[in-house]
Image (cartoon, rainbow, N blue to C red):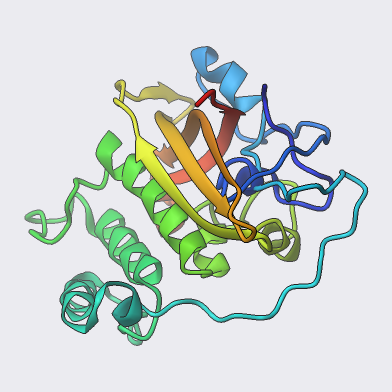
Amino acid sequence: MTMTYPRSLPPVMLCLALLGLAACGAPSETGTNEAPANEASINEVAPPPLAIANESADSPMPDAPTIGPLSCAADIGAAAAERRAKVCRNVSPATRPPCNVANSCAMIEDEIARSCALFDGEGEPMPDCQPAPKSGEAAAAVVELYYSALNARDYDTAWQQWGEDGRPGETRDAFEAGFARTRSTEVTIGALEPGEGAAGSIYQTVPVEVDATLDDGQRQRFSGAYVLRRVNDVEGASPAQLRWHITSARLAEATR
């Protein structure tokens, strides 16, 4: 069955980030960005936020202790984290880039992706900008980064993968609240089809399977797809518009 989110939870992530989703009945949400004709069905439903076990759509969200984001050093080890931070510093034009092992790995990778998209096509390609910023693989990497941020409890970075204004139709606080009961998630990317152009933009569908674990140990699996968009080299486009960002998602509970 197709998952929908509780009114108080963020749609993209409950089901979608599917971090431990429980059944939850709420009205579907519609993305605001235009997608190619053959992606209309996916764009009709916003990505499901993780539902909370035994919670109805009208139930208040439970209180949860405030826990800061997991540092990259703690996540993958100091040496590996420093290697990624060094890559980040090599490509970032920021005066004070977030290329610090005390930040989440997702934040570091986000800055790398932002910088690579910003300078793509200007001079020789930077060897550290892999995959190529305009490729479908780069769009898939955004979905992986999104789940990495959720697992690290770096909700700001996860929120930003939806674009400059975050997830359409949802507040930043509601977005985070939707993951209050999620312990972890694991995303598997499926085979990518070529992207499609429309009105100066490129859209890339990224098939996924998501395994989520709730704080009570309950496990759920969802399958579906995210649709990502980037501006196709339009003059005056902002750095955020030039890189891939999530525009919509649709996930359904998968049969084990």
